[in-house]
Image (tube, rainbow, N blue to C red; front, side, top):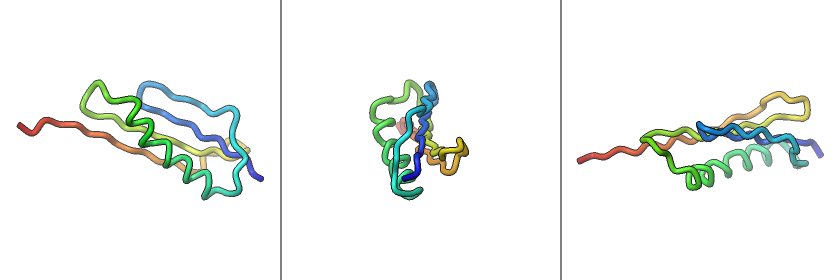
Amino acid sequence: MPRFFIDTDDGDLHVRDDEGQDLPDRAAAREIAIDVLPDMARSELPDGDRRTFTSSVRDESGTVIFRASLSLVAEWLA
């Protein structure tokens, strides 16, 4: 099984995955990279009005093969 590394960035903190996970394929790595984004947004509520949460997938050679981001925008309307 190939090994994939999921790195995350919440705008303040970049976490590099040095351990990785053995996953069946790239699609499984993509799913994990997308699934972590809402949890990041919930746990790191922005201290401002905008924040972008990013995750990326590296393969065994260290090449970034996938990137996903979730932008949170908060604004008062009245």
